[in-house]
Length: 155
Image (cartoon, rainbow, N blue to C red; front, top):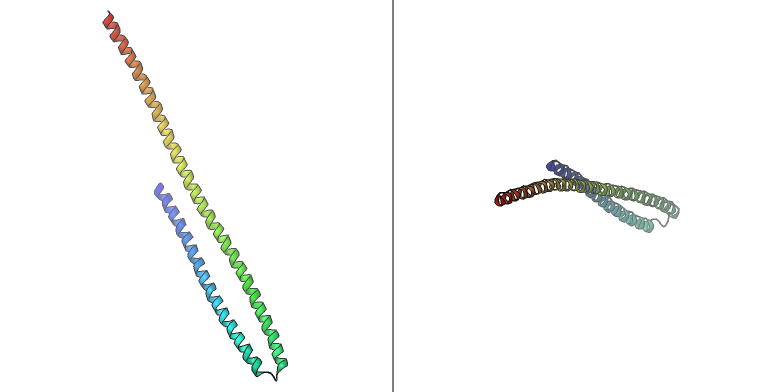
């Protein structure tokens, strides 16, 4: 019975471990995306500087490009912020679920331990009562025997 509970607990811990590995992979992917966005941002900044130096004669086109670039950058930042927020919410939710799982497991284990201890105490009390009865019976028996011995000696 204890081995089954231990196996169940180990399986739960294994599942939790797999979930944590999934989080680690998610964070690695997020780091790759962040690196990629950073490289893209550096690339866009370099391209913008070169275009400004070359295109003094086409200033109107440059203004349009800057406007488009700012909108795209704002859109990317907005999307990244939204995804970042979604990921943070998911991480919090998963952490809460893992915590609840651990709490439930601990509560279950403590309840099982308490039940076992209560059962052992009941068994101990039963044995104590039975020993008490035997001692009382033995004392009564000794008193009767002493009474018989005294009776026989007095006679």
